[in-house]
Image (tube, rainbow, N blue to C red):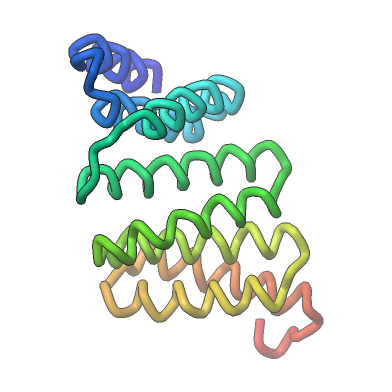
Length: 168
């Protein structure tokens, strides 16, 4: 992860200072990298900078939607890691709209899964089951077997936590 963050810093140094969308894109990726590295504090800093740049960008279109989706996923991951599953679910939910507009079923399936997992952690089993089932359908349709395995795992955990051991 340090090498990936170094590449993000290098890429950011190459971005035109007036190209807020490109800067936000790099910073959103750096925030995601920090998520995977377990550096939530640094990840939040990257996400805040990306959000600020995105707010200042007048650019619209596909590239902006891609950055929005990545930023919502990064923020959600960070909030979940910080023990704020309700806030994480809300952030992940914000990431569904750009995925829908892009018709990006892969990223949408990730958002649905993340919403379900966050709601499960927040104790909202009905909401979790709804979103996890939607993620299961989407992941099955696109052939994401790895993601489908995780979806089944969390579905089983939610059913077990709900007292539905036979369904788990």
